[in-house]
Structures are given as structure tokens and as C-alpha cells.
Length: 75
Image 1 (cartoon, rainbow, N blue to C red):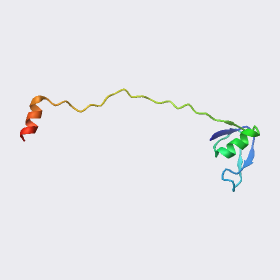
Image 2: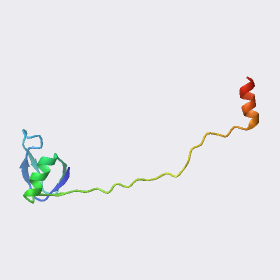
Image 3: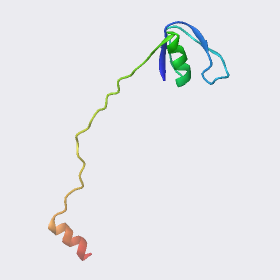
Image 4: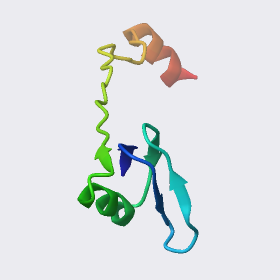
């Protein structure tokens, strides 16, 4: 879960090691820590818009002519 801190807080993302999460910084944290910070209004959820670029180019194998097919068969 990606969050942006609204105020500086201490938290343990792994449940063991305590770290300082600084106001105005963005962090990737576990869902449980994120929910904890959200419940105390210490952070806001960061949502990112993902834009997909669609390529409309079709790749096709080169077409074989009847002559090419005949050459392949006779070899």
C-alpha cells in the first residue's frame, strides 16, 4: 500500500523494527501499517493512474506465393 504521511509518526512495517515515517514523504508499507496510519489520520492513500499505451501494429509473417510454396515442396 502506498501512503503519504500527513504527520511524522513511528511505526513498524515488519512488526518488529521501528522506523520513523516523516511528514510529506511517500512510503510503500504493509496493509496493516497503512490501515493503522489511516485510522489515526496520520497519512493519506496514494493512488497512481496507470496509463497503458496500446500499440495497434499487427505483426504478420510474410506471405508466400504459390511459386515459393512449390519450391519448398520440391526441395
